[in-house]
Image 1 (tube, rainbow, N blue to C red):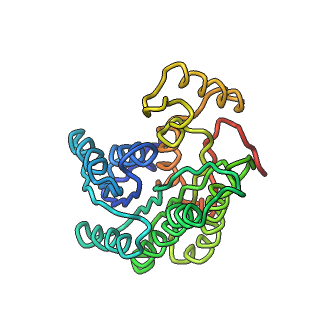
Image 2 (cartoon, helix red, strand yellow; image 1 turned 45 degrees about the vertical axis):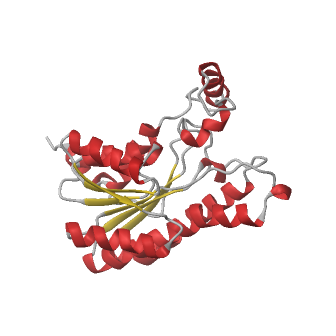
Amino acid sequence: MADVLAGYDLTGQVAVLTGAGSGIGRATATTLASAGATVVCADIDEDNARATAEAIVAAGGRADAVRCDVTSRDQIDALVDGAVAEHGRLDIMGNIAGVPHNRMVAEVSDEEFERILAINMKSVFYGCQAAIRHMVPQGSGSIINISSGAIDTPAPTLACYAMTKAAVAMLTKTLATEVGPAGIRVNAIAPGVIHTNFSRHNYVDEEGNEVPERVEKYKQRFGAMAPLRRVGEAQDVADSILFLCSDAASFMTGQILRPNGGAAMPW
């Protein structure tokens, strides 16, 4: 009988992940490391990146930590080039770093607008460019970008956030057509409501402390929007990313995978 789990084995592969210091990024880093990958954990918060890498190493895995401001093309290039110089190859590029944004269109300042474009959209473009410079000559690789369920469900205050994530979705599809002949797969994840720091504004007090009653109300409110009647956890998304990175998804490219509990079901 064939070993169906062998397709998820990432032993010998090297992954670079932005936003690896917390939330979906941290869950993805530990998950890929558990599958055998060497993970380069990048985050603008170096302490958080180091904490993720240390947790992986403590569990018997292999990981490095790098501080990276994803709004800087030079820093992303240095991150990816450094990973290849240190580990000899690049198999997985996870463009996970991002920020939330909630404001009505009429109230958005130029500074806010440029910031969310830089972090949520331009950084993904930079990460893709840096990755394919190494993956094309190598003849293989998997790029994972983070879009959002916001591309499927328009809502007040989410215009800037949703437009950046829609751009990521189209970048993913278009790049897949460009680099597929070179053996590179490009896919994206569009998560639904996920219980991470992204959503903390829903359940913290004025001092930024989580209020258990507010957390429960948040989970009930947003969980009720999905047929599975719960919000997602970071691990739900990390498991989807593992699938897309693995040989189990070897015939998938240009796809937007939606771990959202059924909250949106586009064609």
